Structures are given as structure tokens and as C-alpha cells.
Length: 78
Image (cartoon, rainbow, N blue to C red; front, side, top):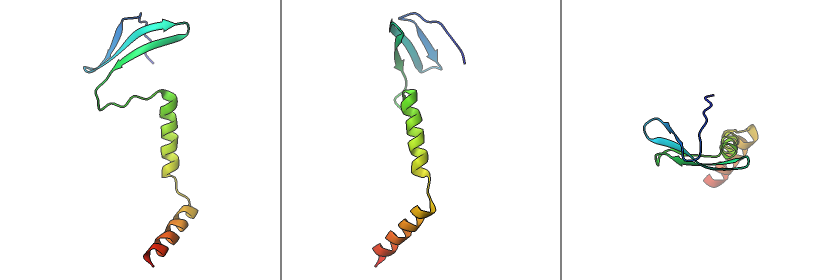
């Protein structure tokens, strides 16, 4: 992990088209601004981890799921 010190109003550039700017600080909170291309998705870490977990659960199948799907398919064909 790279650790840098920045003051309010100062920025970091990531590549040619991304910038992180420190907007202000209040107590233990830091306000940051992000300038990123429209095709880049930005999540707070806790939201990102929840999205990953939900995607894993959605992709997980059990034998019971397959059997129920097969029964529904057979009923739909009748």
C-alpha cells in the first residue's frame, strides 16, 4: 500500500484520466472528490463487498435449484 500525505485542496492523479482531490477534513472524516471516466464504476468498499457476495450467491446453484428448475420447465412445456 502506498501511503501519501495530502492537505485539503491537494490532489493525486491516477494515470492520465483519474484524479482524487482532498476537499476537507472534519475530525476523523475526510471528504474526497473523484474525477473518473464515465465508464469507471466507483463503490464504497462496504458496498462493493456486498455486491461481490450477492453476485456469488446468485451464481451458486444447488441440486435442489436444478431440480425445481427442471420441474418448472416440464410444467411449462405441457
